[in-house]
Image (tube, rainbow, N blue to C red; front, side):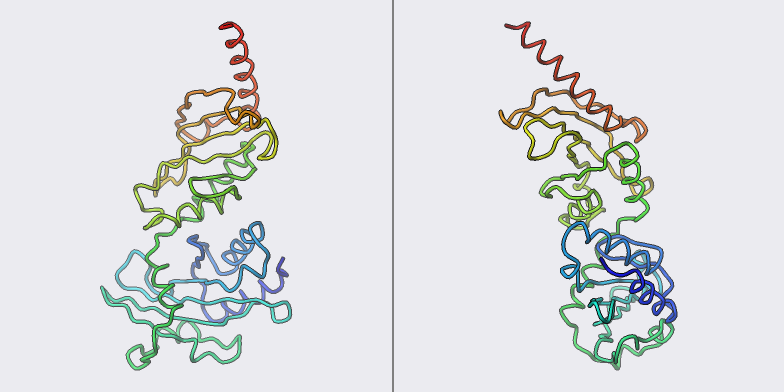
Length: 291
């Protein structure tokens, strides 16, 4: 795990240079550079070794925003080593004016970290005279700018609500293997052109094992159908609780989905497990009667 002091030092330099607005990476927006860094690193820590999480990009609109036709975006390429900590290895500035996009590759002008241009200096840079080539990094960032952002508070609220209900395990989504919920949702959305705004991305069925595991014979699986709207965020509107027997490769019971009007109606994981066991007993009794 990265030393907290490295995050503090890195964030302090950005604040000193005037980059005090919102930052985003991996499609999630945070209120400032420190929170964005911590969120990214915490998510990466559960997915892969720290060294594989770098380099990555932090982005911030220093003028305008994604929804406007006129904005200035700074994209910072971040790397890490144990001696020097977090440091900047590249920087591009994108100026959007109507349908025209100009790119300034500030990486060519960077000296030693932490000598980066201040926010106010970037806003006065002459893009027309720069005439610098658009790098592969710049093309990547241009694509990222077009990707609609998941509001961090929507994702955080959804995760917190499920955790409060006892759903603290890993989740699966279509074409996404079992991972922490935040990673599963972001990976799923990144597979859709247009991300969160793609009408075909929702509803989506999420699966989580609430009793047992992928290596146990008997397990309880909760399947939630999740909807999304830009105002209220994520919410499950249907739930199926299945008791699965891996030895036979079949479910012990096949209950119909239960409709949910709100997150409050979602039963706790403990109650879901109890319902699954009760349904298993009922199914067993019914089979006996048929015999």
